[in-house]
Length: 171
Length: 189
Image (cartoon, rainbow over all chains, first blue to last red; front, side, top):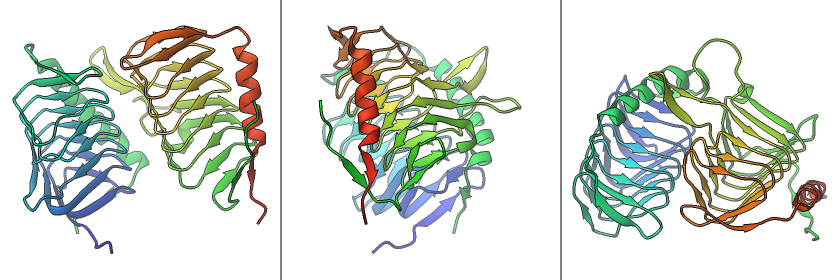
């Protein structure tokens, strides 16, 4: 049985059609959900902040009873899976990365391509997971450049995606 | 090498004039920006993003795929993006002839040459260049901006050179892709 998702989408967000949304989902201003992404709030709600990008085949699942709160300016790249408990701001989940059940992500973390976290792990701010053995280190540089690129990416998607895709709105 | 005959239900696939076979269950965004060269097969669940086009007016080809290509189930073809001179944009991607892309592979390359075989669950990073006559093994990660030279076999995460291919590989891959296309036929009923 699939019930209609309960969506609350900010008028300034862009949620494409042909994606799988289930349960209670709140989408903040400036967040972009590409076509073919999956957001399943089968337990509690999923609450997106502003300026997030969720690309195709990315999966965000909340099975737990509490709401999954996702901060601002996060990127979920193609095929990434997010099953964690909480996410801060400006994180990047690269292609096919996996955030496992119960993980807490701080701010500015990067989960590298095909990397995964452990279950019930708490990642401090600026953790980078990389390589085939899921090595970790703390990022020491600054990400101001990254942020401006992210902002431009968002502006681009807001301009281009509505030309080719139909957008959803709140119900 | 003899491939088995693969039957598909006629209602699922659309065959174009040039012999492309495209599954109705594949996702094609911005189809006006995509070129399929002919006799290319797109299987169920594959995604091609033609909507991520370069900014600016006029017609733009975003993804061009050559002849006798085979895009397996659940693979994602999406053009690469970067900022250049302060402008963020996606850039066109070109895939040559006789290219096989395995299941669940994600391709964000700039170019893929002809006679290339990419395995299952690979990730081809942004602006990677794969030259002609290569093989990428299953579960390989090719990092962004890297170049895979001709006649090489890459494997691992990050992908490293593990072997070389003989010069005859061009004919072998050509025969294989043609064979596969001819054996991809609708079921009788």
